[in-house]
Length: 77
Image (tube, rainbow, N blue to C red; front, side, top):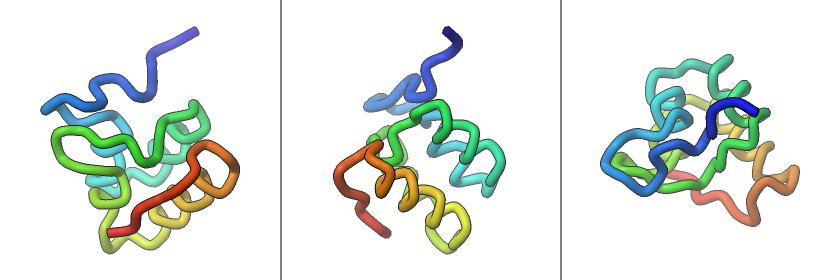
């Protein structure tokens, strides 16, 4: 089973994916997306794409997750 990759979404606490994106932890972002983390979930600090602003590799991962059916749309910063 494991931990929910969307833990704390929609609270004032950063989700694991937003935290990984904001710290430019590419491997963590990939792992969380592989675990079905929501690439457009909003938390207390915004969306993963907002947290990844300026990090083209992480933004590419988020877009790829959206294209593979995890979500229907991805708002870019």
